[in-house]
Image 1 (cartoon, rainbow, N blue to C red):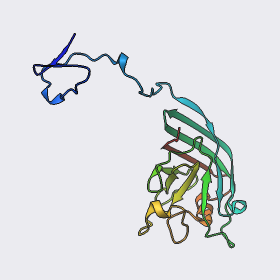
Image 2: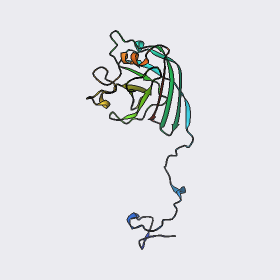
Image 3: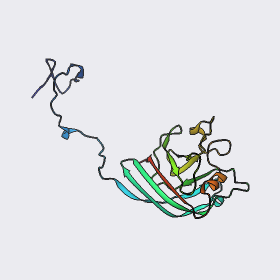
Image 4: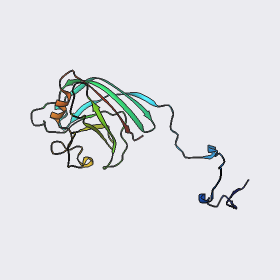
Length: 196
């Protein structure tokens, strides 16, 4: 059976000019399509954990009673995690202005390069009402979560997300203030793009 478009018979070596199509098109049969990756309609689920770290991990505090869950469709990962403060980051001493962040994502984030993030989300903290929840930034090719001071202007976020004090990144004493006491509970929920 030949395909006739605009009075012209299209052979296997010709290119179809879609501008000449008109009327009702027949239903297409997708059985011959190849090289199309399948996306599962059933998500992968599992658990994950989180911990604190930074320039000087030994003074960055710790969390326990961690309950982390994820739901993954293809490369899209939706995460939630609940945890309790075990020890607070030190807010005095030589590391109080040093970088503080958390780590432990269930999958390495997609590598967009240095000018994009795999996710930007929000942190909901049950222990304290802050003027505005800080942004969660997940950089490319990483299992880390960085927190950004709200209202910090001037600096480029993709270039300065790991810059504490003079930049928007959370410092160790911000982590202390954020946790607001031993045994307080925290909760995060966010979505990011994974590498695989």
